[in-house]
Length: 261
Length: 323
Ligand SMILES: Cc1cc2nc3c(=O)[nH]c(=O)nc-3n(C[C@H](O)[C@H](O)[C@H](O)COP(=O)(O)OP(=O)(O)OC[C@H]3O[C@@H](n4cnc5c(N)ncnc54)[C@H](O)[C@@H]3O)c2cc1C
Ligand SMILES: Nc1ncnc2c1ncn2[C@@H]1O[C@H](COP(=O)(O)O)[C@@H](O)[C@H]1O
Image (cartoon, rainbow over all chains, first blue to last red; front, side, top):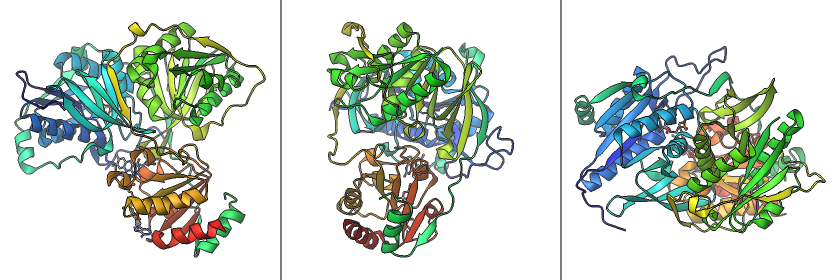
């Protein structure tokens, strides 16, 4: 592995953060099925994005230099998640003001415009938002920008004076290793790291860090959305099963009642 | 009329079973709406794989064979798929909901300025348009959605679409003209960890036995979970807890961010039943839960629940099943 050394021009990493419902929140729907009932719901930084930010912070700490920019696309409420990002250690934040519920392609186009504005060495982001579960934006962003991509990454090493990344990807067939040359888009999987908690000094420092709001029109993006959600409903409930007391009873039920063995 | 392009996934030797569901999806739409579908196989030295896809009624099976396509790397695969969509005038591009499709298809969609819907579990026609159903929020919400645009990209869940019927006609084989020099090469393949041979893939098996945090080490995992899977001729799976602790490899993880399985029988041994785990197995026909905590949430979805210690119950179960 090439050693990581400080470069003349510092490494710049862009980390998108999506505001999502907290993974531990019970999701309820509005009675008319038009949306998720958001009253009293806790929000969080998408866990995969928190992992991406943690990785960016570790890279910066290891190199001893660099700039980490967090960005979120959405309404003013996303400032909460950007502040968390700053408190974790990001250097500055960009809120791209846009209506909620844009689809993946629209988000990817907006992030591509942010990329062109900032020219980071690479983008580190979540593989999947845990609300829409789409798993699309990073790949679309790579396609739009014509850059290399490494998705579902659970092991990341910078090589050759921080110009390349060796990425271990979690695929259905097991871990696959690829090398991408910067600039590139890297999306994270759960095992990459465990994000740090926000510390009190971190929160204090975050207050002084720049958070810039940008209107979509200033980015020059047409972010029309192609996906329309017509209706939401809960999944069918499984009917309650039975308790068996012994292994013999279980085997008997599986053989003679369920007939699955 | 719709021209559907099915992207066939394979492991270099044979087509993944989940691809057949994507073909089943294409057959269904063509039966309801008219139109035809074609199947695209990308790779290197893949003529046998392409041959195996000729009996499902595709107008043709397209082969994109090139040394540069030996491994499924998103940059060049997306490039070739986008080219084929243009030349075929495809309006729908569909693949199985796997890490392969998830890596490649959104990129191809972006190259064509097309939208995409992941994890489709149902499709209906609505006039000249389609209405799709898909899962969100770790399986807690089913959304009915529409997708505008001349080209639509989809991944479909194999549990939701039956494999295709065989037809009498044999599809023609057509090779896709490729110039290696024009293929993007931004991603370099280094290697893939050798697949543990012997057991079926959890997304393809009739029986899946999964272990959770109750399992203390890899030897126990192999002995208990692997042992039970073997007597049932099934696959092994695991919760994220075991993947995190390195006891089970990532490819076994079942759940919101792992594999989605829908076998006839799923046995959850020492798994609590977090929503993220259940998102990956709730569509199983028969769920069995073995857990020492009588209040574990997994019992709420289990058809048969047995309160007990996996270290006692599983060996006993293996013994009794052998009889
Ligand atoms: C963004 C995100 C995505 C996630 N994605 C996934 C995913 O895809 N898949 C997934 O599985 N998880 C996922 N998780 C993690 C999930 O929330 C749970 O933490 C995880 O599923 C717990 O695994 P477990 O049930 O094995 O462990 P635990 O919750 O610790 O449960 C262990 C169970 O074993 C029982 N037990 C212990 N010892 C014994 C014994 N000797 N005999 C019998 N029973 C015993 C206990 O009673 C307990 O119920 C995700 C989490 C997040 C935040
Ligand atoms: N509104 C948003 N703001 C910032 N980043 C986003 C937004 N939506 C999606 N992303 C990024 O795209 C990733 C994948 O999201 P998805 O394709 O929706 O599953 C997320 O982990 C985020 O990094």
